[in-house]
Length: 78
Figure 1 (tube, one colour):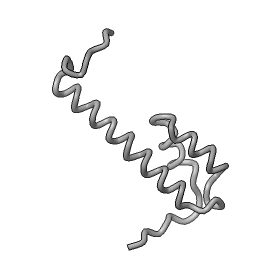
Figure 2 (cartoon, rainbow, N blue to C red):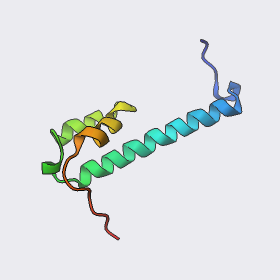
Figure 3 (spheres, rainbow, N blue to C red):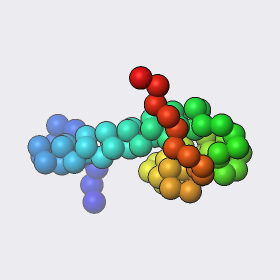
Figure 4 (cartoon, rainbow, N blue to C red):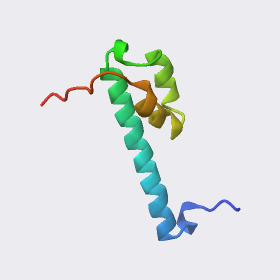
């Protein structure tokens, strides 16, 4: 497989890359906001370690959202 420059990709390939990047960004942002707002007692393990894990894409944010939290969902302030 050869490396291609952005302008050498097809429109479909560009769309897939941008979609995947958007999903990763949304997952990471959601997990980070939840981690910051969630009390330490509702996080499984050290919050600092989870924060470091969030940079491991895409496994870190998914792992935190699936297994790193316990307790009631956070209330959203209106």
